[in-house]
Amino acid sequence: MGRVVSGKREISTDQLNENAARGAQGLKAQGIREGDSVALFMRNDFAFFEVSLAAGMVGAYPVPVNWHFNREEAGYIFRDSCAKLIVAHGDLFALIEAEVPPGVPVLLVETPDEIREAYSLLPDQCELPPKSNRWLDTWEAWLSQFEPLEADDSQAPGSMIYTSGTTGHPKGVRRNRPTQQEAARALALNKIMYGLEDHLTTVMCGPMYHSAPNNFGARCVRTGGTVVLLPRFDAETLLQVIERERVTHLFMVPVMFIRLLKLPIAQRQSYDLSSLKFVVHAAAPCPPHVKQQMIDWWGPIIHEYYGATETGGISFCTSEEWLSHPGTVGKILPGVDIRFLDEQGEDVAPGDVGEIYTRNHGLADFVYQGDPEKRRNIEVDGMISAGDMGYWDEEGYLYISDRRKDMVISGGVNIYPAEIEAELQRLPGLQDCAVFGIPDAEYGESLCAVIEPEKGVLLDEDTVRQFLRAHLAGYKVPKHIEFKDKLPREDSGKIFKRKLREPYWRESGRKI
Image 1 (cartoon, rainbow, N blue to C red):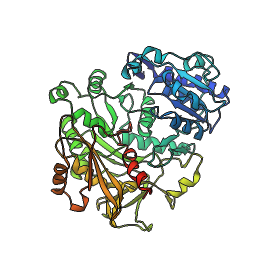
Image 2 (tube, rainbow, N blue to C red):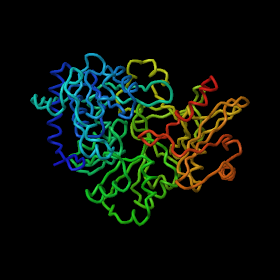
Image 3 (cartoon, helix red, strand yellow):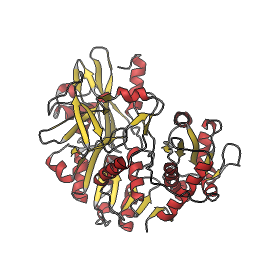
Image 4 (cartoon, rainbow, N blue to C red):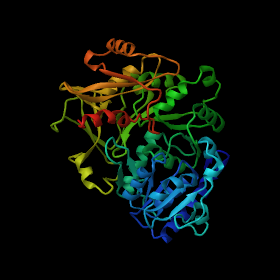
């Protein structure tokens, strides 16, 4: 029997599904129908799965909202998604109360002890506020009022994920309700990307308001295995859980690898990780030396896939493929078409960098919530671009050069910051870095590198420049170098370049 574990609590997947069916009946009673939206403003918890499944059973869209958002950011998504119901952890309600759209009911989930402890929340912060017309009931009490809804054979539309974007508001990716054939194709692709099998055991390391953890978590619950929820990622805690639960499968992001590798070697070697069979990473580029060290430690079970919220999974790469083709993100997955286009919309030759356009026949089509024109702006002949630049070699292996929006044009020369960041990752004493374009009166743009040194390490501009000049052409060495104690990050592990870049462009009075 499958189970979901969080701290000292656990629930069987049978009970989880029954709760979801009760929730679906409740949603129907609340007037929520196919095509409507239900917003989730909560951390990973049992109720996150229950609400998502319940919404899908009535054909509605669960809308996971980043609970790190400030009041206005969360309020924008509540309004833009046209949420008919909001479900939130009790300690987060004070943040969003003023942003709940008029007439939209709210259900609260009591904040469990393990989450309270992980985020150092005081007991009074987690007490539910007095009942008012601002919130309807607790999720558990509300469920108890309804009999389970009998499920039909129709496919759930899936979560409406809001992509972070670099400019403007996030965009909600709203997919059509999949056909049986599309759902079967999607499952086949997910089995490749996540190594899915019956009765697996996994740990949810990342927040499920992000696209990949959301999909991975939902798929794993359906396997009938064990899903352990980490209230907050901690490197040694993960190793403890792997050993205790005999974890077989993991989805991770590269920053988690980096944190694991920073543990002392003796500490790393003290845990039995022999149960691990399949580990996949995605969502952000992985520095080559980090991936090599993880393969050396965990063995050739480290896989990777490339994709985006809009496109789904595009390519897949095993450890063996990566070792023989360093830097690749693998070969194209079955049912995926791909093109590489230049700025004039013409196909480029193999080996040449172009903007990547794909069509994934395993996914239902989508529009951006409330703005179908944005969908048309990223489409060429029915193929979608997620804004990435790349190429493939003669053997069909795909390589990502950079994000189109991150590409810097300095004096008419295209420069890809990802290449410079990859070299910087080899610099002794460097914790992390970000390279991006800033305004330059002479060249239009010039390169800026922001460096986060390791604790206790002093780095200076000359050291950084000398290191890069030994490995890169002179025009790729950043003109401006800054040092910060900590780089801003999204929970996916991606560095929030927008927050670093914006001040420069705001002061210049231009955006490009």
